[in-house]
Image (cartoon, rainbow over the protein chains, first blue to last red):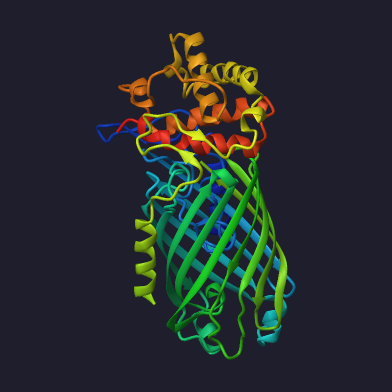
Length: 297
Length: 154
């Protein structure tokens, strides 16, 4: 993505976050009104933004709809994430819109600097691969927060269409395709009696390394799980695990996990810091730091 | 694979009857009581603690422009007493709730989901300001959450 487009995307995210964006709500006639300063759902209940641009944890999309909009409101979020592992780095940024706590749309960019991984692949140390991800998520049933007297979780189905900008390269590395579609189902619930949020996701994907190394023609089924413990209204700690396919002969791939701390001093801003292990990416086990800023309304 | 998954989901969807240790019914005309409370009532400071929390709660609600309209012109003394009684019962304390059901009390108010959450936020602040441990706060909120069905207008 051109620098100016990247810059305007980040600035838009900041603008979304730093204005006291009013919550738009729909009255009985279906007209949209401004209904005062950002309100809606409770702190941290929009999740943060996962690496592929959907609302959820850091690695995994959750059934929660982005932002703080309730069933009559529109909310959303913008984010910026940086991951630094031993041999490569990743920047991800994007925006999400949540409509009536029912539908989420997202667009995001994943920009991978291959660093030593690039050297190992014969590309040189400053090689970037860009993936643009378009996401959509629909809440099918359940409410993760309100239905405390039921075991039924909030369940959402989602898709992530990923378009790798370096088609020719990834295909030369053995990938079958330069773009692909992930489909996932997530079940999320906040167990207030235990101050614990749990998520389980099942995903069908063709993506190699989240899509950085292209896409396989065959789908595989992968599993993801997150747990977050609420320490207080503003702070949560947790862990996630995500299995990944292993399609490329040239580049072995392993499961990923992280342990994180998420801090939301206000409803509009949250910061997440994590220790992440992305599994083997070509040259070895990639462990490192994940840092993310999320702006929600 | 997909068949197993959908079967599992369907079973999960159907298995909706199990609940935590809460004596309540679906539409909650009866106040729920937390029976595995482990000194919950004490963590809220007993009756005096609840009274202090409700004092702060009402101050917060009147100061918050999202909730203030609902509390204009109410009999504050009575509302506070009803809140204290209700929360005391929920926390398995030695009280009787003498107020109306949540549906009756909120009928015709046009409470939205956002209004409901705004009230919860103000309650959280009042509980925190009075030193109620976060775990205990969440146990109360877990018991109160199902009441959204009686409070939020259709």
